Image 1: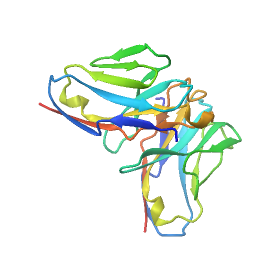
Image 2 (image 1 turned 90 degrees about the vertical axis):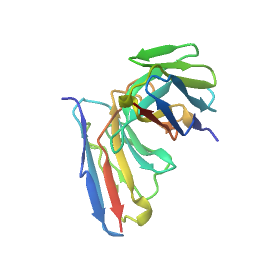
Image 3 (image 1 turned 180 degrees about the horizontal axis):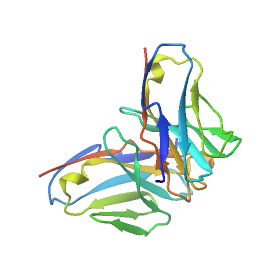
Image 4 (image 1 turned 180 degrees about the vertical axis):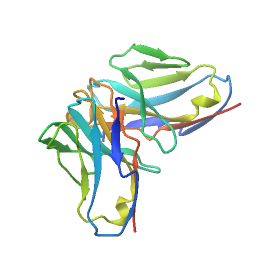
Length: 112
Length: 114
């Protein structure tokens, strides 16, 4: 079954300690991959869309990269305000246009 | 301000009592979608709509109905709610096909069915 898997489920970092989150997918014919940030009790907030292997996008301390099998969200020198759940999503599931599949997310905690 | 709004934000109801959660966007978006979010299961798509009068099932459509009579509105209807529909619901919209455009999410509706 097509799916999107994120790891780790939770990640605790000290402020300034860089790390990476992983999103792997099993769907063939990837038509882009999304990254979102979600704060507790709020709706997901769009971060990036990546369309092709080798593509990279950056926003402040975040950089997203894409290969043929997975995507990484790199966090450089994180701050406590980066604490949130990070979600990736694949729009290619089942070949059905409009059907978006989310991973279960990585909950990031950054301690001062 | 460009936004997706949902009402109500919180709702406690009883089994079998029909309810509607409204969703409205002011960005003239063609694509709209409903999700539910549950601990350990993540965000799952319920229904989506590519345009007015065009709707399709997502991954968990059972027990839900939707309609898209106007471009800006996409209500979610629970004809006979059951406790397993207790969840956090999000509406989202994007300009066109979600594969090409950013999806904007509403603030969420927390539903409890007793």
